[in-house]
Length: 118
Ligand SMILES: [Zn+2]
Image (cartoon, rainbow, N blue to C red):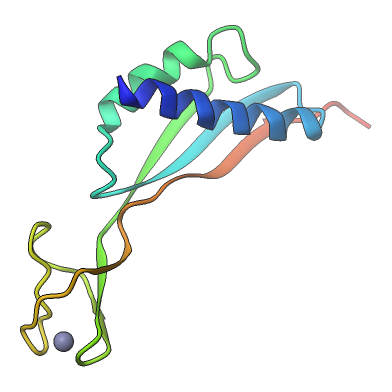
């Protein structure tokens, strides 16, 4: 499953960050997932449980933020959210664009950790 390797990479990044901060525990991870990134949030949650086992992130909360698709129309220089996610038609000039500005991302946007007392 695609989501498992994706989640493995994400957890690795999170753990690396946590280790650098000398964190003792990861409490919460926030992921930004684009509407057309092709990943299934439910599958990510499932993968999260597996990938965090025996790590600092075990038992952490996973929050998924969906990022809507935003397109850019080069004809009239408009950015817009398409009403259809297959054909991106500019609402202003009705031309079809293939310039996607966001909606494909898969990224770790924030991490909540606890650090030892100084
Ligand atoms: Zn346009």
